[in-house]
Image 1 (tube, rainbow, N blue to C red):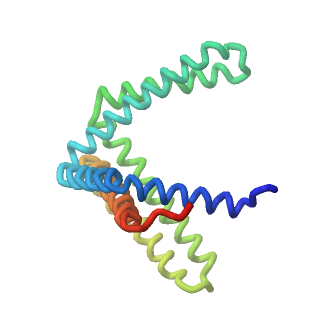
Image 2: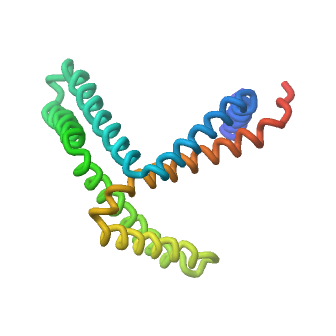
Length: 195
């Protein structure tokens, strides 16, 4: 008898809940470390921005090398040269980020600002599209705020590059840690499901 998709999803959810409940202490420690790392990143934004650029640079280099090694046996593939160029560009970009961390911070900050601008404009358009629905104004306000924030950050650009990446990294780590901690804390006291 085939298992329905809903039953399979429910079984998976229960297994995930049980795993988090059984290892809740580990998840709480992990959550606390994420929150502390986020606070450190916010308190020392220049250091954490530079560290993020260094990590990103090494990831690009490693990714390019692994991609190139994987292409050794695929020399006759139709898009071989495009993939080799992609791998080489990844390694070169990683090296450039590592050689000039300040320029790397500027580049990544500009990319974040462009992301805020595009996300804000898409929220504004989406809000105007769903305008008769309730709460459309909140989506609109969120989009306008993202656009304004991106313009303010761009106006202060050389200085913004020093702290923006570290601040965003810190906020992200705190949000992930808080969400993980809240979930583990809530599931910690629950009894195991009956077999």
